[in-house]
Image 1 (cartoon, rainbow, N blue to C red):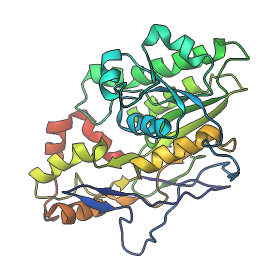
Image 2 (image 1 turned 30 degrees about the horizontal axis):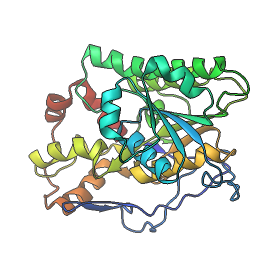
Image 3 (image 1 turned 180 degrees about the horizontal axis):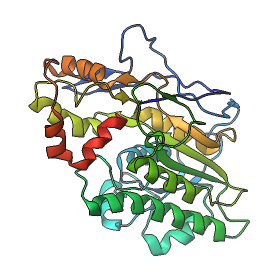
Image 4 (image 1 turned 60 degrees about the vertical axis):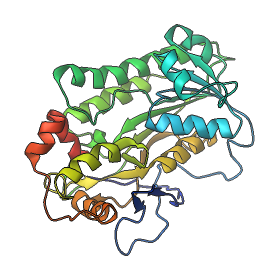
Length: 329
């Protein structure tokens, strides 16, 4: 599946790489692509004078203990913004954000969310059960409900806060799964939704966010597969990949709509303060690659051949119905 933005576009420099002592996968995933690629955003005419560094923000974050949330909190803290972590588990959040390393951070469980959201400059909503796991009926239910419930709660708390205290910005995550899958179609922010389970999840997820008051600037970021050396999709893919001689997952023809961890954090960070960031934004590279091609690059850096495909039965053995998520890679 490709997911590319359309009109009135803004360019982000793509300069990060996925690297560790065992893997170095450049953002340039195929020959001929320049070293700078772009995230295309609808209605994103950047005002270069707007920067989150110019004025300190108070940002409430759901999903802060997740892969993207952790990096976002680290970035906000490094730039001296005030952070309110909205969590279901205080102990988990405290272990990830110890007070010695994150002085001044506020960690709040659900009964305290109201007071945290009131007075915040912005809310970033990233909460949701990971989809790259073995799906059972219970997990599928939780994948949807975890997103819709938290988003609805956040919106309700924003809408019910006093006018002089409610956040002016809501950045709410969604996913490129909204579009469904195709080996031939190109999707942009105006494309219709798909008709599979993950598309349904995304529609309900976004519908909950769209109920926020109209005086709140809403940015819905449809995020692609997030790549980084410390977790996310690569952490799930590499063990399967290594078991089967480094070949493509499934048919290998699936589109891999991806974004580096640091780049999605940059996008969210910019959206916090830049008023042109509103509505739907595809948070992906504009030039996705076929999954088979991505696996060739991954195989080269892992020292694994790329000729033996990972069979569908192996994906299903590990992920169950969740193997369908490979269609979004």
